[in-house]
Every structure is written in C-alpha cells, then in structure tokens.
Image (cartoon, rainbow, N blue to C red; front, side, top):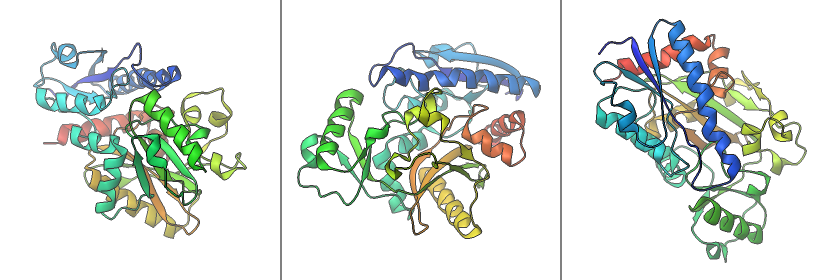
Length: 333
C-alpha cells in the first residue's frame, strides 16, 4: 500500500426514511467535514480523493484498490437507516481497507444505547438507570423516581432529543414513547435524568490519551430540566439553544473530579472497544459522581466541532489532528 493515498469517504442522503424532516441537517453536516479533512490532508502532502456514496459503498470504492488506498472514514449512515454506520465499517473491513476510527463491532455496540449501557454496567462504568420501552402500555405501573430523558434507542447526534424529551409524569412518558415508536420506528430508552454538569471527553490513541475536558455551559437556562444538548443546540444556528450552549474547553474542573471523569472515560472506551478516536459524554450529579450517557465512536471532526476543540486546546492544529488520526489507522494491524 502506498501510504500517501487517502480516500475521504462520506455518505450522502438526499432523503430520510424516518424521523423529522429537520434531521437531514445532521446527515448533511458531514459534507463540510469531508471537505475540511481532505484539504487538511492535501496540505500535509497526501494524495486525496473524496468519495461520496448514497447507496452502494462497494461500487463507490471499486476504482480504488485497498492495497493502494487507505480510507478516512466519515461514513455515518444512509437515509436514516438503523446501524448503517456499523455496516459501512464492516464493509470496509471485508473489502480489505485500512480505515480511520472504530471497527464495526464497536460502532454497533455504541449505537444501540440499551446494549451499550449493559456493556458499560458489566464493566463497572457508571451509567444512569434506564428502561427500554417497546410500547406505551409498558409505562403502566412504572413509578418514576424523578425526571427521565427519553431517547430513540439507536440514534445519535441528538436526533429525537428536544425539550419535550425530559419527562416528569407517566402520561408524558406514554406520549413520548408513542412519538418515538411512530416517528423513529424503534424502541424508546428512558433514562434517569441527571440534573447536573455535562462534560464531553475526547480520547485518542491505542492506550487512549484524554484530551482537555469540555463542559457545556447551561447557565442561560434557569430550569434544570431544560439543560440538555438538544437537536436544536447542535444543528439549528438560529435557535436559542444553539446560541446559548457554549462549550468551555478546557473545562473549569477541580483535579479530583477531573481524575474521576478521565478514569471513567478510559473504562468506557475499553468496554465498548473504541479504536483511533472517540468521545464520551457524561453528566455529573450533585455529589460529584460522573455517569456516562453516550459513547460516540466516530464523533464529528469538523473544524467547529467538539473533538477539534479539545485537540486545539491540547496544542494541535486542525491539520495535525487529522494527520494524527490517519496515522493511527496506518499503524493498525
């Protein structure tokens, strides 16, 4: 393989088969990221081709023999279908490519939030109590022990998460479960809502190095139940949520809590089987206990996204970050 030839691979979805029409914003965010990654690699001297596909990854990669090309994998899914991100990685493995980021098994484990929480709990990684609901009738007889946040069980990028996702009564919970079942065609995960600070922890490397911690600043929200990173906060620039959830990086955190968060993040990385780079999101309760709420195996690498924010705080330029992630894949056996 000629190490200097890189395919920047991403998916393009003209439509979605489920969810809200606005969810297409999350799908299309990867296009600008792919261009930025390609430019960074060219600046570093690599030969780069950008490959976009909307249906058939096998046909899209046919002109590029795996012995000659390495893949910078930004594939996240196709038309909103479940587990397409994992299938993309599995297809790359089967076709013989080396590629950046996590293998298909790790992506599948992290994408199914219920299975991820089982794996994390078995590994001793704290995660909020939860219940998987496949029908609104399953809410009957369940006594809520405080507010819960309800999410589609197999989405990421805050898809399906808005202010109405935080629930305080069984009747609200029934309505939300029905909404997720009908709109997103999957079960709903109801998780105890940790009304505390939220941290994003970026890690990379074989024995993962923790980059500077990032904390979401929710100070503009008086109601603790509204302090969430919603879909609007991530993808709708004109929304109040987007404009009022700045991220502090490095986070203002005392050494004891910092050590706790970093330890939990490393354990979560190993439990899920992450490779290359990943981000672990946590909420911290009033007693200072961190709980993992999500492991994102291939987080957004856009110049304005959280992973680069953490890398920049550690002293890396965007190009240096991209090249380092690529070299991790080149060294992987």
